[in-house]
Length: 361
Image (cartoon, rainbow, N blue to C red):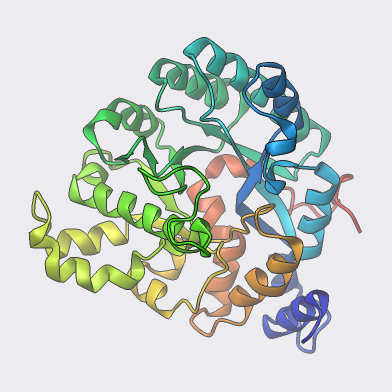
């Protein structure tokens, strides 16, 4: 089996970039200019604070919570990622609104310090804490109006209540007022102990996470949420879970939902979502047919997905997929995200030939 680095180099040649025969400067710019919209960030400063607060025990935290700037930048350079959009993790552990606000303040300080230390390499999302609506309102104002957040991160469900439920209307209205981008993420299915496999021997992230995302997406369509908030953009991770694969099923059997959903509304809803490539992405013919390549964004799932998975599977899956034209691939890598999140242009230095001092060579 080829090494991960060799696989990436071969994939770059397939894309017409890099040092491969027939490579063009424009394609190489696209390869090196990727925007990763699915990058998990656990602030080391937050871990220190949370341990003092008794919210976590460092030795019990999962491997992906040990975020390190040097390792992240090394992966980004290796995979041709110019900008990573940071999604703060573990923001569902607070015991009170006051503690949530204090914890978010720690996260925001860590994020702004990181952005300033590495100009042009990082942007970030504002975490939504739907268990604490007043704190979420404060966080949105601070993150967007003062700190320059490019979107909002939210779980697919909270305590078994999925996105699309009317109880979240206040939050969604606030994001809609800003023409905001909502980036969702799944977790264990409701009603199951956290981290305990639903099926022994099969980790929950393999199947259950995809179902969690699919449930949220179908519920957003079913409840008419996307119609009520037309300026709201929703990004589904892992290529939308199972949603593209059940699109025809949902069109055919939408009448069985309550309230019923007709096929036209299903088709419209499927094309309202955006989808990222974290997973890694399976052959994308169905996704392109369902939603269009202009709705697909590059995502890695770092550091939950290792550097070897990202360079050996995630990047080559996009570069070698015959469902994409070269123009569409460039959009997936970079242009679609820039169009969706205009605030990214403040961080994106890839159009500047002078380069960034924090970018490795």
